[in-house]
Length: 164
Image (cartoon, rainbow, N blue to C red; front, top):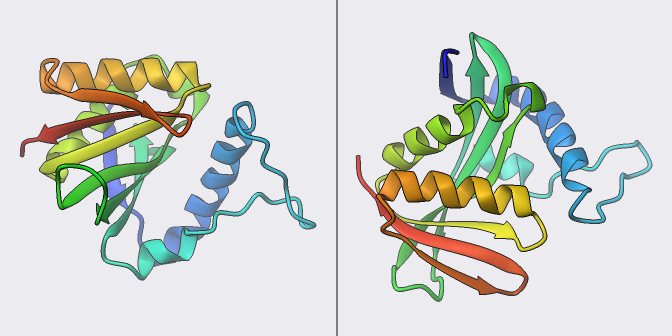
């Protein structure tokens, strides 16, 4: 990877840019889920505003060479059925197509894991084969193959511990 990337928290004043990127992401995702647009031609995102209200939600831009290239939404889960009282989770992760397969996504995911040390859960829809391959490889490399994986409710779920 020879492109410089950065991860920057999305300030409230720039949430409109994240909203636009979420539309691109959701459009991409219609390959795996039958999302419909509303009367304004938008997909929308039910939890969008909560990322600036709820302290357990964290919105980040991904920039490559100073330009927007994607985003990652991180959230903390409590009261799950897992062995951990709280888990960090990737709610959404998007790299624009021109920046995919260059190592940026893996580097970003590893940096995000380090930013939030502790227990993690990452899931993919079982029909989203590219995402499953990406996350397995990224998590395997990050944890030196020390992670668990299970399937339930149409999802492939990886759990692991991150370190700072």
